[in-house]
Length: 313
Image (cartoon, rainbow, N blue to C red; front, side, top):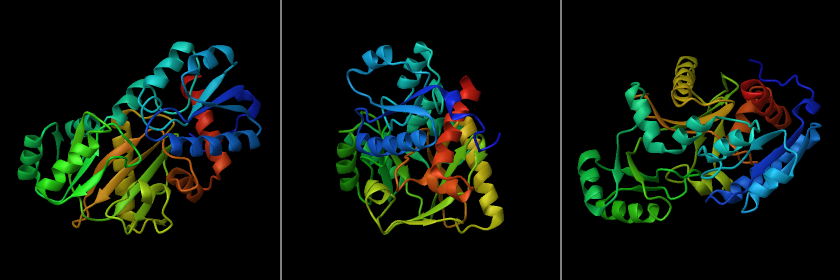
């Protein structure tokens, strides 16, 4: 499938760009959504924005909407619920369907699927009590990384090196999510790999002086390093791209997605998670990978939109 859209911009009809919402990632979504909306309009698409709030159902009924471009990050937009609503309303939309969206949003169940297929992902435990924290520390050792199971943008995440720090991090993460995950820490470089219309784009190597690629490093800091080419040998880069394709296929992603992968000191890759509505801000990684593949931002958003025609039109 071509990365470039050959469709007439008018063929998309009236396109609602859905952004904002109520998740912990609202601010990032507002930036992403405005960037996507501007690019679509500049490309000749009849697009308008909807900040998804309490009046969304009324807007859905009152506006003429031929298709939706989903730029909602996190719960309510990336977790299958918006996808289900749009399917009930008969409105085609960008990105993954209900099942893949819901599965990818749940880091624990994504890992369970990967485990079942023999795909490499760090050992983990679920934390619901102080006793769980103590048991996880004994089983997995330190350092560890704590994550809310259903948040993105590294919200609520923390690297810990002691039982006391683990308990504190679990309590903090539990403010965001009733289900908290703890994983073995993989020491080594991190890579992020975008998939667009069935093609794996050039991987990006990430570097940050922070202890990990956290919210600040993702959206605010100016000292985060992005490497394209990613610095791997041709053989290892090919291995990483095949692993990413298998990981996304296991989850069932469509249209576009982005996987995050660590590499350990032995050179082995470890899958962390898949994002089905990745960021589209000026700091975001999918636009960066697309540029390396020869697509500017406008061509990228048109390609994502075109996929919604062919996948579910």
